[in-house]
Image (cartoon, rainbow, N blue to C red):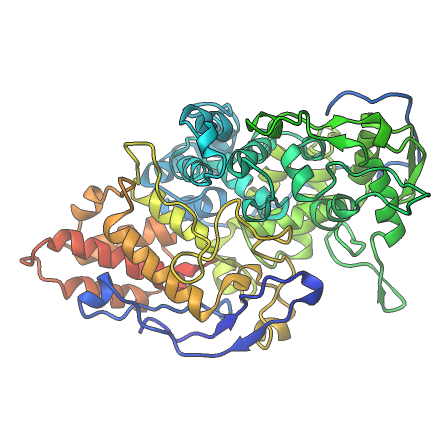
Length: 591
C-alpha cells in the first residue's frame, strides 16, 4: 500500500454542543477499479496526522456605545526567506489561492509573480467570461415553473464556475466564505431552493473582493439567509402572548459569522481571566440583537416564481421593534434598516472580528493551525488596509496569501503543525482544473456530491446545518493532534466510509468523467511512455511537487506495470498516475 493510516469516524452532524466523535483505528482499505485492474493497490485511507447597504426604515435611529476599535497602524509582514519562485512553488500557491492549479496558471504566476497574479485576479470583473449563478440558471431554463423543485441547476452552475471560471481567486474566496457564512440548500424549506442558493452564492461572489461590512449588510438583507436562519417574519415581542423575536440569526451572526464565542486577542489567542475563558457575548446580547431583526419579510408573496428570493428583504413596520436594543456594550433604537445597519456597525467595530475572520480564512485557504503571529498580521490588515480602511477584503486576501507562513514551503514541510487536509470538494476540482475538464453541452453533470457512500461526503452549498461541513476548532478525538493542541477541521468529514467512497468516485471520474463532463488527458498522454516525466508532471500540477520519493517510486512502478503495447496503454498509464496521486497521503495533506 501507499500508506496505512488512522481513520476517524466523524459522520455525526448534530450541533456542536451535542456532538461526540470516536476515533476508530483501522487499516487502509484497497481501492477498486482503474488502479486495482492493473494489479496496483491504491491507498484508500486519509492521513490522520500531519506528518508526526440598503435604505433606512421609518423614524430615526440612535446609537450609543463604546468608542470604535482604534484603527492600528498596520505592521508590515516580515520578508519571508523562501527560495526563488519556481513551478513547484507556483503550483503550491495556486493550491491555496484557487480551486486547483493548471499548467496555464502555473505559467501565469511564473510570468507575473505571486503578487502580480493576485492583482490581475482582482482586476477581473465579476461577469467576465461568465454570468452569475442566478443569470446562468435562468438562461438555462431553471426558472421555469416545472423546475421549482429541481436542484441540479445550482450544482451545474457551481461546478461550471469553480472549474472553468476565469476568476479563479474569486471562486476560491467565495467557497471559503460559503464554508462559514453558511447557507445549505439541503436544509432550506422553501420553493425554488436551487435559485435561492444561487442568489445567496452570488452575493458572496459579488462581495468577495469588497468590504466585509458590506458583505454583512448584504447577508442581513438576503432572502435565502432570512429563510435559512428563520428571521424572516420574526415579530417584535408581544407581552400579551409572551412571544419573542426569533434569535437564530442574531446568535449565528455573532457566533459563526463575525466574533466567535470567546474574547480574542488580536493574534487570535483566547483571552482569560482568573483561569476562565472570557465570553464574547451573553444570552441577553443575543435576545437584544434579535429585536433589531424583526419586521423583515420576503419582497412578495408570489411563490410562482423565484424572483422574491433574489430581491432584498423588505420591512413590515407593524412587526418591527422601534424601541432600544442594547448589546455588546452599544445601543441602537428607532427601528428600520437604520437600526440594522447601526447594529452591524457595532459588530463590525468589535475587536474580535478581525482575528476571528482572519483565522477562518487562513484555515480554509492555507493552514489549519496558523501561528498567533500569522493571525495577528492578517488581523492587522483587516483592521487597516494601509489607508485607514477596515474590512478591505483585498487587503485581507493579500495578507493571507503573501504571509511568510503561507509562502515558506521549506519551513512548512519541516513543521509538524503546518498545512491542511484538502477537503473532498477541492480534490475533485484540483483534478478537474488540472486536466482541463469541460462540458460542451454546458450541463456540468457532476451533480450533488454529498453522499458519504458513493460520492465525496461534501458538496458546495449543500451543508445540512449552519455549522457547515467543518468546525474551525475540531480535532479528531484520541489522536496525537488532540494531545498537541492542534486542530484539523477537515477531518470532520473523514471516515472509513467516506475515504473509500472518495477513491471509488474519483476512479469513475478519472476514468470516464460523467455525461459530457470529461477531462482532456492529451498533454499527459504525450508523456505516458516515460513514467518519470508523466508522474513528475502529475505531481507538479496536482500535488505541488510534494509527493515523497518513495511515493513517486510506487506510482511509477504501477504505471510501468502497464506495457506500452497494451490496448489504450497511454490512457491507462495516465489514469493510474492521476488516481494514485489523488489517493496518496502526500497529496491529501497540502503543506
